[in-house]
Structures are given as structure tokens and as C-alpha cells.
Length: 247
Ligand code: FPP
Image (cartoon, rainbow, N blue to C red; front, side, top):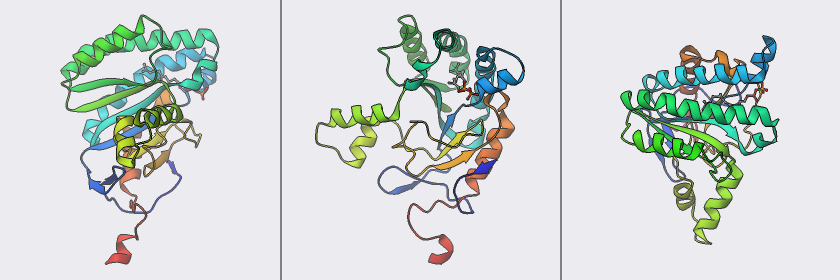
């Protein structure tokens, strides 16, 4: 696990675009699930086999998250830039989202997982929309974990749309509210790259960034625990002085 920033010691604080709040047991983790293609290529498999194994990694991660203090998990499943990929890969991913949502719905209901999809819906395949709606409404009571799948998602587009909705009456708090999700406490990116790729840019203003070389299909409970351990070893200062200096 490598890191891009950080001090030592856990703070358990987060920033909701106003005052920091103590939320150590209700963390928002976000994951850029990168490395599916390289994982597949290394095994002489088609890229879509990497995505398929990536879906299994997501299931393992969702199962492990609540015990690590995560109450919201937002994962980057398909960026608005991913439409530029070859059409067969895009279609395979859309079919995978369809299958995943249908297959996991009952399990999510059983395990208290609420599922939401963020991002644009107007460009998604027509048959995917009712499956999303059904999964969202069937799991709405889930209180153990809120899983948000970002599909056809662009943070810049989301910020722009939120600002336009506020129609000149924007404040930090209103813009956060209009975006619809809390600030991110920890952003994890697998696959060894170290960039944000237009994911939750506003919400990550004070996030701790954790980068790991593990390819997403290999990611599991132990990797999530290691990432959260790294997160908890940081002192979050939100621009203030280190605790040691204030003592
Ligand atoms: C990035 O890896 C991954 C994606 C663009 C797709 C993410 C999708 C999944 C993990 C499938 C499962 C998700 C759900 C919701 C069922 P990449 O293909 O860019 O990998 P590379 O950088 O190695 O080429």
C-alpha cells in the first residue's frame, strides 16, 4: 500500500463542507476499481474476464466494509469517459451491471445493504433503467451499508448540474446537498495509478487518498482492511495545526 499524503494518528473526523464532524464509525469510502484489463491481459484473458472477476471483488469488498466502520461505499463502475471504449466492452459492462443488480438484490436486502446508482441515466441501455429502479426501491431500508454505484458518472458534470440547479444561489452546504452525498473520508484507487479521474472531486476535498498496486480483481477483505488501516494512521487536520502542536 503506498500513500500520497498524510500524517500519523487516527482522527475519525470528516468535513461536511462546513465544520468537521466526528464520524469515525460512519465512514464514507470511495473506490476507483482499476486494473481489470491489466489483470486479464496478464492471464491471456479478454478484458471482459477482468471485469467479471472485478464484480466478484466488489462482492467481497461490500461484505467486508461494514465491519471496517464503513457506512457508505461509492464505487466507480463506469465513468462518462468510458463510453470511448470499444463498443463490445461497453456492452459487456452494461450487461454486467444488469446481471449484478438483479443477482445481488435479494442478498443486499438480506444483509441490510442499500443500493443506489449515481450518474446520468439518459444514456444507459433502456432495459437497465427498471433494474436500477427496482434494486434501489427494494433495498431502500438497508441500514448497514449504503452502496453507491457510479455509472455514466462524471464529477465535473455532476458539479456543473448541481450549480445550475442552484441557479445562482449556491453556498458550499447547498452545493454539497445538491450533489446528494456526504464528503468522502477515504478514497482508494487500485491498479497502481495515482489520479482521481473525474471521480467525486468536490466530495474528496478533504479525503485521505490511498493508492495500492493491487489489481482490482485481486482486491479483497484483507486489502480493504489494509487501506483502512492506512487511513486510520493519518492525522486529518482540515487545515488546522497538528494535534501535538495544539497541546
Ligand atoms: C477499470 O479497469 C474498471 C472499469 C472501467 C470497470 C469497473 C467495473 C467492474 C469492477 C465490474 C463490476 C462492477 C459492477 C458494478 C458489477 P480498467 O478496465 O480500466 O483496467 P486497466 O486499467 O487495467 O485497463
